Image 1 (tube, one colour):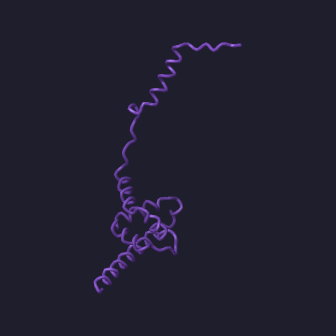
Image 2: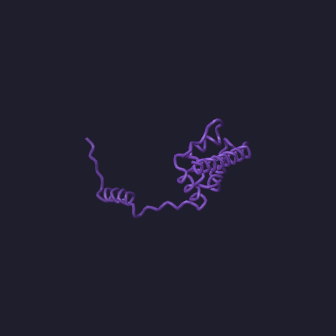
Image 3: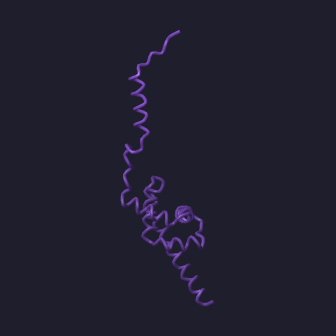
Length: 126
């Protein structure tokens, strides 16, 4: 039967290399996101779960945004909404329809503003 003959130096090198790769102190930290990405992440976080509703309302015909998400969309602001839509239109799927999508996005935002105004008027009348 053959005998395994590993020198102690090889064992020490193997254990040393494993230990070095495991130590988190020697790891290179990931760079922080660029300011534009940070802005988009903040906008998406503010929108939360309502982001799906807004996405489908803009990109899929026939879907609506609930009252709560309407309020959330308005609190996020026009600039955040616009920036998220512009980012989404950079995908190859939507390349040919950018102006159409931006128009739909503006319509939805205007409807939300109008709806919000009607809700405030009704609350004042009560």
